[in-house]
Length: 382
Ligand code: GLA
Image (cartoon, rainbow, N blue to C red; front, side):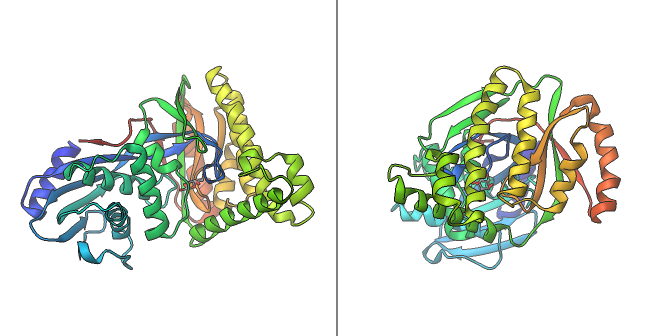
């Protein structure tokens, strides 16, 4: 159905047929803020996705239309640069990356659609970047591999959105596999699909509907703080290249005496890597209870040590803690808003949400939305 709707919308807008690419958003079970520290992550692609429909033009223009905003944007391929309009930057950043490889593109029309809630921490921007790259790759026969596209999308985000993100979101969108999470080693790029076998339980996302202005600048600050910690350790232990190689003892010896804030940031990352490794073993052994406990511990670290949570996220995690149907919950993604990820017994979801909605609204004066995420395959043509 989605395909027919998009084809019809494209035909109406541009008067031709098109190629359509779907690229999903993602969840991350555990392993937060570890990707840019060379650690592990455990994401999965979900049933919500960005869609890019594309067809060639005969001139040198890129003409795009976003259904969500009912907005058009037009630019010449020779003048690709950021715009104040917002959403076109994800497409422009991708075109910029492609052109930087030396490829000559021709003009094209693009229609952007999707159902990933924006600003919810489900990586709508990475999904859009990956969908756009995949669409250009198909239309112009560019032959980029998925891993090349993941790196290009990441760079597009750095250069055109100003967020110095890691690789997790793009990797999850491009490499997702139905009913599996991806255990990705962000240092070696080795990855393994782990079956998400949580019988009787579902992944419930609770959206705070909060997106703090500070989220991008604070994100970039966290990266710098981690790098500072590494620099101090390296002065004594030159073989340590990232927080992946650091230990709590090293942090106590070389970072704590210099700056407690940097110590806290680094401590969270080192602990989170350890947690992820044992969470993977929990998943493989079918011990979802133990995995859930680690999710709560991750939230505590993100809140108190890494300080990327916010009162609305904390409220939602506190409310479900100790609830008999909830095995684990934590804030997910970069932080400062977005969703919590919860592992909840399927038959209890409705009553849990009914209980939480009025409480959340009363406490925060904001609306609570929820989604049950199913785990789907990565980027593909429709
Ligand atoms: C954002 C970034 C990712 C990752 C997470 C935190 O989603 O885009 O690269 O760092 O935050 O784990």
